[in-house]
Image 1 (cartoon, rainbow, N blue to C red):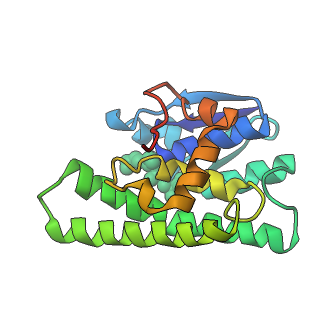
Image 2: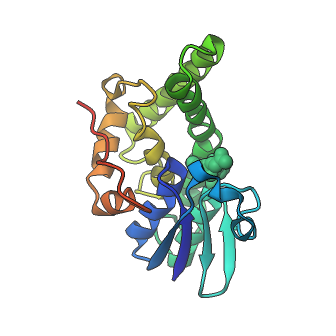
Length: 210
Ligand SMILES: N[C@@H](CCC(=O)N[C@@H](CS)C(=O)NCC(=O)O)C(=O)O
């Protein structure tokens, strides 16, 4: 049994989608970051960086923050969504790390400057949107030759997908990236994605490109 501390954001949804996909029983605890609940002392004990998501594994009392580390832990615990060894394992970790260092922080800045503070910082808007498009291009080229980023469906896809689900916030037209669009729709149709997207609460349907 896993206790998941999360909110309705891309980093939080990575873990709830993975838990659904893995079939691991879990209890979701909402940490409302709009009310600064991520700074509460009891949450800091398991998430010293005061950010969601975090988990506690009640099988062994182990706690973990950072979505990438959590995804690897859950995949290794269950033996699913990440090869145990060899090239397939490292290919998936490669794309997971790409997400953690690229689309996560960069598209996060796009949300900040392009959606929430439009017109206040033209340099930042241009810089992060340009970088966002570059990253979509990288993903599109990868998916032109692979069904999923690391061949088999893996925690790398699960890490990237929730960031792409904010394409409207990012003012990105998925038709510009047809391979990303094909991949996005396939993952959106998975029952685990549909359930995990609504954790810790339902704030609307999965965005669908036209
Ligand atoms: N690298 C971290 C990033 C986590 C993160 O940025 N979480 C955001 C929500 S998506 C958060 O908790 N923000 C609270 C804050 O900014 O204070 C991870 O992947 O887990």
